[in-house]
Image (cartoon, rainbow, N blue to C red):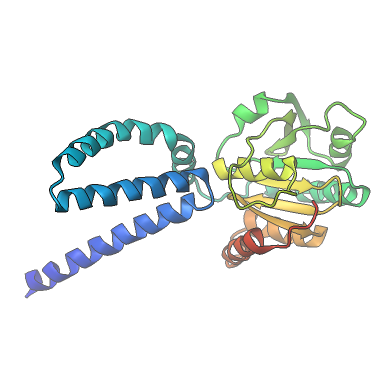
Length: 272
């Protein structure tokens, strides 16, 4: 009896696992250039199956050779996405750096001031995945986080206002750092370089990026490749608390991500 039940459940479990894997891959690549490559591979697989069905041996031989070379091509084409996926799998949410007294308040005070003064800013906060490569691309300063220092760094009359600031622990590790721009196709053409850089960085690791628009003063936050715009200081505080104090905000992170996806895809294409 047990063997009979097991023989029914095993294929069901296998189908569910495979379905979940395929669904996760599609969701992960959705809106990126890699999605177009996946669709092309799917078409080739369908053509191969059709050729097998009608016993078109020449086509089968050619496509078999293409698939043999395609393994190496797959690793090359999907290298950034695979690195990003493996990095996410190996990390967990952590709020250690914001547990230090006053650090969140300093960041919020700086962002609120720059928003009111329409000073453009890009601040990346490191979590579990290290940002050493991006730190080295900028000017390493190793200074304690303070609102006044952030104002000075992003002052448009200073040479450090371009690029991003990286916060590690309770220290500003660097300024003027260069972040990778996102390649997603869903963004409006009005979206500026700072916002694209924030999305691009958070697509590759678990950092949190805060952006202040130089044109409108709008505050945005990027997490896991998703961008939430038109925030005020209070909303930004709630988001940061939900991300870095998960024990105190158990359901907030899930609700934030779901809401964030909708905003990211369907918001009005207003100037940044």
